[in-house]
Image (cartoon, rainbow, N blue to C red; front, side):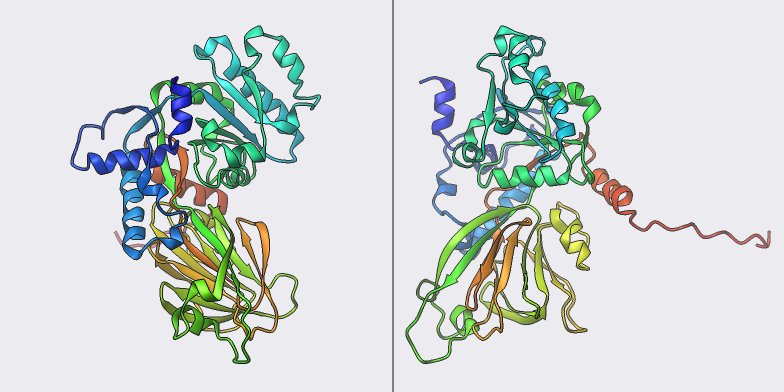
Amino acid sequence: MDAETQRSKSSTCFIHSLLQTQKKHKNSTGEANGVVGHVTATKTDDYDSATHSRLLTKRQLADMAFGVRELSKRLGNIRLKLHVRKIILITKAHDESLIQNTRDVAQWLLSKDRGAAYVVYVQKTLEDKKQFDAKGLLSEDASFAGRLRYWTHELCAKSPHTFDFVVTLGGDGTVLFASWLFQKIVPPVLSFSLGSLGFLTKFDYNDYPTTLSKAFNEGITVSLRLRFEGTVMRSRERFSDRPRDLVEELVGSECDEDYTHRPHGSHEILNEIVVDRGPNPTLSSIELFGDQEHFTTVQADGICVATPTGSTAYNLAAGGSLCHPDNPVILVTAICAHTLSFRPIILPDTMVLRVGVPHDARTSSWASFDGRERVELHPGDYVTVSASRYPFANVMRQDQRSEDWINGIRQTLQWNSRKRQKEFTDREA
């Protein structure tokens, strides 16, 4: 069995492989100041034992979150050298101006000058694009044949282990799209800035030959971004004349989730999960739970539950706090709450939240996941939100993790931008 086949048969999430190595060598030292060798995936039975993070016990969820945080700290201080052969290029959607950029990067990666026979995947829709000129690209060098391939949504969803490395060309929205494509296993993602915002796109496109050469030959620094797992839970039909109460069903005397609700799809998200009133003209009535406790009932346009990465997105627009992406927290912000007393709250990432529509609500609500896959929540339905077992591996610039985030909110959001106060001119000597 060759190495490629062996790799595809094992669990190819390099993050989980590193977590397993971290458990086995918890007290080992010596890697903090060097380069980690080629990382190969190993079978990760501990992580395959539970399908969804919402099903983990409190201890398991805490252990998982702690392990990811510790690994993220270590990865921030080392250069991780990966065995990269298959690279996927993800380009900003609906932007014809970036097709040429995609072609240029693909051509550079396929060139014999790279010293490695990289296999490059571009989106299937580019195959017949005149501007991309796939036939012309293949005719330039006979060695390109078989190494220029095409990815589809289905390939990314069903066979994420196909890819060793992700390169995005666009803005933060393109990075979010990459996260959406890879709902479980996420290869390391290196993002070139060709969009409007730049919180997640850390590299200048004009320097892509140097940046990619260093990444493949010298190693990368990775930041593990917290993602959420959001699961829609549908209310089961019950034949009874007694009025139903969502609070009683989830944390009260009738607490039996298997009897009262059933799962109806899960999504891994990088920014936020929003439950809002959708097209309804009236306020949403929303019940908020944390673990086995009922927090409050919210009358508002909606609730935004954001990751630290998503703190600069919808959460910010709704009046939530800015939060450094290394913080292990969940941010909860009401959207136009009809009260003077609701304030944004910050909760630990070891908590499982449930955001639901009470049975006596006047209208249904709608849930969205990173702005995609809007789902109607009928009275009695709810969404669980918990830390995902599959964090997002974002490639960072060397030794600039905190500086990148601070510079981002300064430059993009003009954080605390103000004309400096003049000094006194009549001050006594």
